[in-house]
Image (cartoon, rainbow, N blue to C red; front, side, top):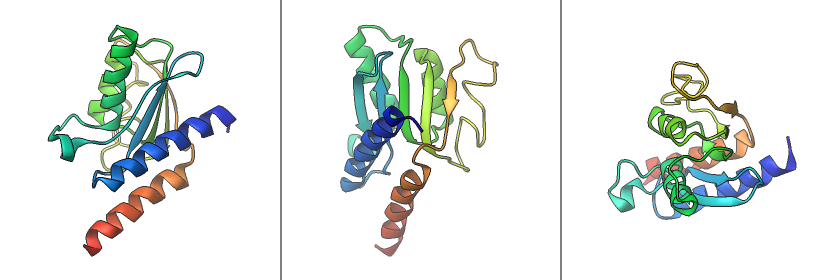
Length: 153
C-alpha cells in the first residue's frame, strides 16, 4: 500500500469518526487532485441536514466542484471508507473522477463491486479506476462499533 493512499484513507477515517460523534453513519471521504492536494473532505450528514443526498461522497464532490469552479473533476481521486452506493458511484461518473479508493466493502448496497460495477463495467459514458481494501479492517471496525453501540441504546 502506498503511503499516500494510507494517509488519505486515515483522513477519511477521521471524517467518519466526526460523523459518528453527531450520530451519523460513520462514512468519510476525501477528494484529492492530480497532485495529491486535498480539494474537499466530509463525513455523512444525512440525518443532521435532513438530506437524503448527504453522503460523504456527494458532499466532497459538491465542495470540490465549487472549489474547482466546474462540476467535472478530471484527474481527481476520491478516498472513501466504505464502498460507495449506486447513487454516489453514479455521481462519480458524472463528475468524471479518475480514481476511487475505498476501504471496506458494502455487501448489501455497494455500487462498485458488491451489487453493481458502476464506474468500471463500461456501460456508462465514463469509467474510473477502482482500488478497494485500503485499511479495510479499520474502515469496517468503525461501522461495526457504531451499529453495536446503536443496538445497545
